[in-house]
Length: 146
Image (cartoon, rainbow, N blue to C red; front, side, top):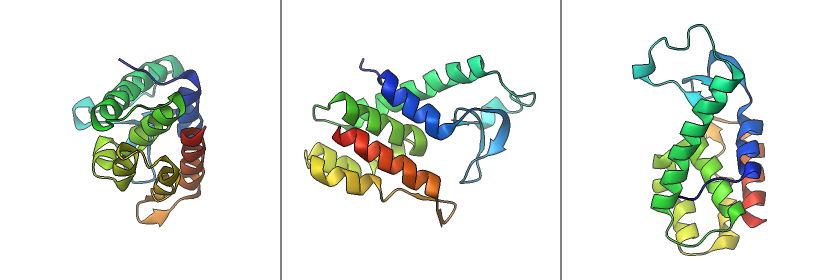
């Protein structure tokens, strides 16, 4: 199975940042570590926080899930930069967002020059346009074209 490069993983870590305590993300979901969305079945597992090493292990599992989604949904060959950008996007927004997006359709049609514009459409959370998401999508678009 194909995996994200070190550069792609660093992009995710940069934008997610490490948070040792549970917090609500921009959309209001409980989150910890490097953007790990806490699922109901995890309950109060993280009530006492998390170490950076444990957060990196969670990140690896979450990235693996995003990698699998990209591999399942994208039917054309990708460069490392394209794959990394799509994994970062999917990690951040979930596989459902990639699946139903025009972004996915443009990639699968190999309309690569139109893809950066599609990345930049995904900058809203909780009904607000967020600067952090604008910066992240710009970085993903640049990585996609690299």
